[in-house]
Image (cartoon, rainbow, N blue to C red; front, side, top):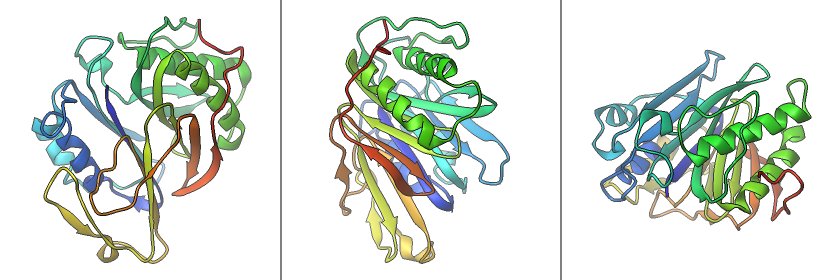
Length: 268
């Protein structure tokens, strides 16, 4: 399996601390050493930055540099891979990127889908993972449902339907963002934490690093982290229940839904 990480914030925020903890699990404290990736939306509209490698994040000089880089964003996604489907290659590293209705979309998945996912006409995988195939299937379904860009509130019900349909075919936990919102779906396991004033210290569970967030934030800041497993040892994370989904904007949960039943959109 793999591990997921995402950030949603109301002010440009870097993900150095969380990504450092996640990267340690990519081959050092964890066995997710088959590749890694990080996607970060420029908060000033400067586009999308994506970094991916087919190496273990824990031993990657590039990942180490990103752990120190002040890459501020309102929305960031990261992933460390343990290959279950598809060879170890850069094409199979998450997050995956596509443009839908003129918007940059990024997607990361943790799980294993047991059934074949049908190919569509508009979006097709470049690699050989079930994850990228699932992403393309979702975008093809959205293209059939919308002829122009839609906001997160309108997309949320359909994303829930598609996620539940994929979860019914195996294990499906995912993160999706277009730089305006973050969508998270828990098929089996996801955790979340929202940090706001009064800020306190946090210590990584996988490295001897502590950050005093009160020294690097303002009283107005709100930052929500979504991760497969809690990344800190001294904070209270909330475990999502299977079937739960969240739509986050600027650090706040805007919509939440519990278990959603699959519909006729079930792939295959």
